[in-house]
Structures are given as C-alpha cells and as structure tokens.
Amino acid sequence: MGVERLPDLNVPRGCHRTLVLNGQITLLGGNTTGFKPIETAEYYADGAWHPVSMLYPHMNGFAASLPDGSVLLGGGSPEAFGIGQSWGTEIYDPVSHSFSASGIMSVKRAMSSALTMPDRSVLIAGNWRAGDSFETWTPDGGFVPGEALSPGWAEPFILPASEDDIIVFGAWDTRGNRPGGRVDHIGGQTECDTLLEDCLLPANYWDLPEEHRIADYTYLIPVLYKENTPAILKVDSGRFSLLETEPPLPLEGPDGGRLNWGHLQVDRQARLTWVQGFDSKSGMFCFARIDYNPSLDGGKAPASFYYAEQPGGFHAGCAKLLSGGRFVLAGGTGWEQGTFPVVLDLFNTYQTAFILHTEQPQKTGVPLWAILLASLFVAGVVILLLRIKHLKQPVPAEESRLTGNLMEQISTLIEEKELWRRKDLRITDLASELATNKTYVSLLLNNVSGGSFTDIVNGYRVRNAQTLMREHPEMLLDDVAADSGFSSYTSFYRNFKSITGMTPQEWKKVGE
Image 1 (cartoon, rainbow, N blue to C red):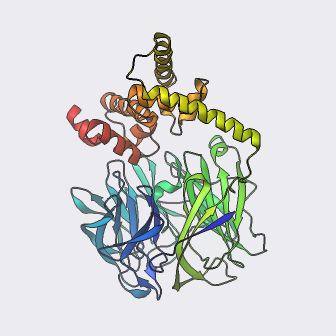
Image 2 (cartoon, one colour):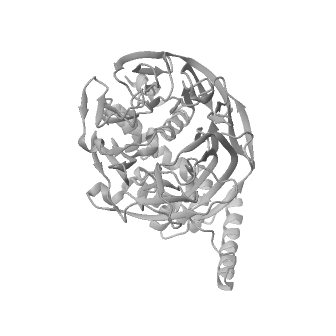
C-alpha cells in the first residue's frame, strides 16, 4: 500500500471527526496536546489546511449529517481530560465554512450519538456519568426531550430496525459497565441478544450511522467475538448475526504483532466494506476490503488485505475512506506499543496527515503502440470538436439525421431500461450500450441537449421521485431517493431542489 504525505495540520489534534463535506476533507473538533478540548475545525483545499473557529468544544460529542450537506454537532466534554458534559450545539456549513448556533439540548451530554431520520430530524441518545434519555432535534422546533433510558448508554449505536422501530445498543452504559446483550427500542421495550453477550463492541465515536449501512435496515459493525477473535457483526432489521468472510480477518500482521481491528466504513456504490486495523507491535496500518454482496444471498464475503508501513509521524487514528480505495489519516493520538486492544495516549496528539493508497499507481512507461493509438484518438476528438464548434452553420442532412437518431437511441435506452435507477451509472455504461465511445456521447449530450450526462440522468431521477411522492405519499423520502437511483438522501435533496426550486418536503406539501 502506498503512503503519500500531506501538509501538516494547523494544530495537533486527536479524537476528532474526519468527514468529507462538499468534496473537501474536513476535521471537526477533538482534543489537542495535553488532552485539552479544541474549538476549531479545518478543511483541506488548494494544497493546504484552512482553520475555522467553532462556537463550542465537542470533544466526546455527537455529529449528525443533515440533508442539505451540513453537519449538526452537539454536547461533549468542555473541560480538559474529558471531564464534564455540555449542552450547546451548532451547525457547520461546508460551503461557507462557518458555524452557527442551533440551540440547547434538554440535558447536558457527553459520549452521545445521533441518527438522522428521513424527516430531517435527528434522534440523540447517550451520556457519560449522568442520566440518559432520547431527545429529538428538528430544524424548526429545536430539541424535544423523549423517554428516559436506564441505565442508559455511552457512545451507543442508534440504528433503524424497521420503518417504525429504532434500536440502541453499545459497548458500555453511562458508568462504563458492559451491558451484556441488552438492546433498547425507542418505544421502551428492552431485550437481550445472546450473540451480543459474546461480542465486544467498539466505541461509536468515529462514524456516522450511514457509514455502516449496506442496505435498508442492514448494518455492519466490527467486533471482538468472545473478546478475542476479530469479526463483523451484521445487524439486519434488528436481528444480529456474524458476517462470514473468506478468508477471515487475520489475528496477526506481517510483523507478528496482534492486529486491532476497529473501524469500518461502507462504500455502497462499489458494494464494498473496508475495515481498518492497527498492528499493536509495529504501528503498521492494515485494511480489509470485503465484498459484502454475496452475503446478502447467504454466501461468504470475499476479503483481501492491504498493509502500510509506518513512516515518520504515523500514529493511531481512524482513516476516512475516499474515492478509489484511498484513505486520509489526518491527526491522531499516541499509543502504547504492544498493547491489545490498543491503549491510546490521549495527552499526545499529532498534526501529520497522510493519504493511503490501496491501489498502486500505474507505471509511467507507455508502449509506443499505446502512444500512437492515443494520438489517433485525440485527432478524432479534435475533428469532432471542430464540427461541434460549427453547429450553428448548416449541417448536412445525413449528419443531422445520424445525430438525431443517436439522441433518440439514448433517450429510448435510458427510459426503456430505466438506467437512471442504477446508483453507479456512468457515461461509459451508456456508451458501451450504444457501441460508441464516452467522449462522443458526452459531447453530443452537451451540445445537442444542452445538458451534461449527469444533468439528464438526475432529471429522470427527480421525475420518478415526483411520481412516487404523488402516487405513494406514504413512502419515506429516504426510500423515494433510493428507488429513484440517488446514491444518498443528500444527493436527492440537493438535485431535487436544484431542478424544481423546492425541497422534497415543500413539493409534497404543494401537491397535498
């Protein structure tokens, strides 16, 4: 695995949130050297890290992604050493790079978690050394308290089990005790799952719930099974099982050190799960790439493994998945060598940053035949561009007919095969169906239809969403987005508003 060094952060930080917002790597809060809370964020753009002042510290707080691409942050420990709870919340806007106050929670919280709901509200639970309860935040109504949770949770997983049921479970209660297999439901029901009794769950601080989701009501979580063996817990509609991988997650790294597996992220477009590991002896990072698709039909999930040697300034931290099987590891904490599970040194933080590449770059040497072929292709594109440049001039009837026929083929193909339902649809797929090249299709769409391939596909998706909302008003908007081919609710929200001038909720109200 390749390692690329990025410029250092503005300040050392650890236990922060690393998110990709508006296409930019963004670090939110955390603590700095001396185990002190930090009230800044920073984002990576134009080859440098840019600092942004926050309103409140959120060390050990919660984060929730909102449909418009912003993030709600709340609670956390306001004092050094992770002491105390707080009730302030704020919203980070990744477009303007600014924070704005968003109200006060009904109770002070630290080590809490949040789940963004289909109706844009946020459900919150979890606390540390204090009472716990549900509460709900809405953009218009602020925070509303819910039923109490006793003995409560610290950094719990809050996951939807069905359209009208939400479960809460985790590694510890509010006093740091193991809860066994206890699972709480939002309606007040509590049950015990025997499989959970044998699993040591990780702290749910690093991830958002959607980063664990592989399908509706189906989530993956890394665990230690019977406190010793690394495994992946599958939560399907509130039922717990272990995901079988082939081969299983290894116990030791190449240097013989025990591997600490503990950070999982899902790439739903590629239908892959990535699990991050950490060699407790050498500090080497490793990643497991798991194809979870066969597991949806009861089969074993194929797994492959990647390792990164430790360069100078490498540290313990959770890497964030980027496109193309890349990860960013920015900031982090010290660690005690040889411990299992890994013991972090929260007083010692880092400001180094790296990009980890699971796919090695291609060799730069290019065969002569490839250069000649590329030259011929470029020449063809130049000729095509010159033709398009003169589209305003009279076009020969035969050429106009061929262009019109191809546009008709494109429309028919997209509509009849409903290609827009495919979340991973690319222009290369369309070109392949038409037995032509993607450059020609792209140029044709831009210059004849006046829109890009993405614009056209999203237009189909939005029209389908409107039909669903009109004919099935009971459908959750999250399901409408998925059925219409959008890769996420955020993408659905953004494109729907861009095309119609209204949010999905506003459009539904107008049609009622």
